Image (cartoon, rainbow, N blue to C red):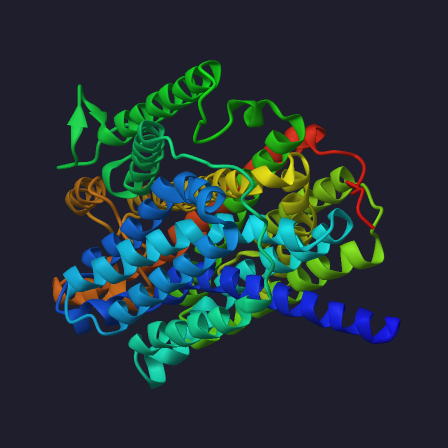
Length: 538
C-alpha cells in the first residue's frame, strides 16, 4: 500500500469514527426537543394528561442526572467502547418500548428509565472515545463536530417532531431512533477502544450518594415552575413555609458535599474512588466545566424562549417554528468545524470569550427586537449570533476538559462533564420559565388594574387565580376561555391586550436573565488555557 493510500484510508476511518460518535450525540439530544411539540398529541394517544407526559420528560432528565457519573466509571471498568455499545442497545430497547407504548406506564419504562440509563452510559463514553481515537491536536475539531451534532439535534428537533406528528405519528420518531441505533452499532466496529490496563472497582456507596445528591438537586430545579422557587404556590408542598424546591436543592448540595468527602476518604485509604477528588482541583478541567455549565444554561434557555415566541405569540405551526430555528444550525456547525481547521493554534481562552460574547449579543439583540408588531424574521439574526457562540464554545471546551487530565481518566471526566451540562440545561430551562411566568403575571395584573374597563372585582379574581400559576397562552386560547366564561366584549378585549403585552414582557425578562448569565460567565473564562494542548504522539 502506498503512503498516499494509507493516509487516505486512515482519514476515511477517522471520518467514519467521528460520524459514529456524532450520530450518538445527535441521538441523545434529540428526544426532549423532538417531543416538546408533540406533548398534547402523545397524551391524547396514551389516554393520559399533558402533565403525565411532561413528568416522563422530567424523569428522563432525572435518570440521566443521577447516573451520569457512575456511567462514566462503568466505562473505565468494562471499556469505553463496550459501555458505548451496551448503552446503545439499552437505549434502542427503550426507544422500541416507547414506540410501542400503549400507556403512560410503559412510556415511563421505555423513555424515562431505559433511555435514561442508556444515555448515562453513552454520553461519558463518547467523550472518552474521542480522546482515544484522535490525537490532542485533532481533538478540538472532533469535539466541536460531536458537540455541534447534539446542539443541531436540539435545533431541528421541533421540525422533526412537527413533521412526524402532523403527517405520521409521534411513534415514528422513536422507531426512527431504533434504526439510527442499529446504524451506530454497525458503524462502531471501526471505533478503537482504549485498553483497560488495571482492575477497577466501582464505589457503591459513592454511587448512591452522587445519584441521590444530583437527583435531589435537579428534581428540585425541575419542579420549580410548579411549586415555586422560594415562596410555595397554592397547594404546593412546603416545609416551614418555604417551597420544597429549596429543601430539595439544599439536600442535593449536602449529599454532593458528603460524596466528595467520602471520595477523599477513599483516596486517603488508598482505595479507588468513583471520581478522583483531585480532578476538581485541576484548573483547566474546572474552567472547562464551568463554561460548559453556562453554555448549556444559556443555550437551553434560548431554546425554551424562542419556540414559545414563535409558536404561541406569533401562532406559527410546529413545522414553521422548526424552520425558523434552522439558521442557528448553520453558524453553529460552521464555527465548530472551521475554527479548529482554519485556526488550529488559536487561544482557546480567546475563542471561548468571543463565543460567550456572541451568546450575549444574540440574547440582547433578540430581547431588543421583540415587539408587538414584529414578525418571525426578527429571530433570524439573533439566532445566527447564538449559533456562532455555541459553535465557538463547542470547538474548544471538549478538548479543554479532556486534555487537562491523562487519557485514562477521560471516561470519568465524561461522566462529570455530562452531569454538569445536564445541570446547566435543567437550571437554564427552569430559570427562563420561572422568570418568564413571573414577569408575565406581574405585567398582566398591572395592565388590567390600570384599565378602567375592567371592574375591580374582576381584577381581584384574576389576581387570586394567577397566584396558582398562569400558563403562556396565545390570544386565541385566551379569547376562547373568556367567551366560554361569558365575559363581556370590553373585558375580553382588555384581557387580550394585557396578555399580548405581558407575553412580550415575560419573554424579554427571560432573555434578560439569560444575557446576565452569559455576562457572568465572562468572569470565569480566566481558567481556560491560553494555548492549545499538544501531544507527544506524531
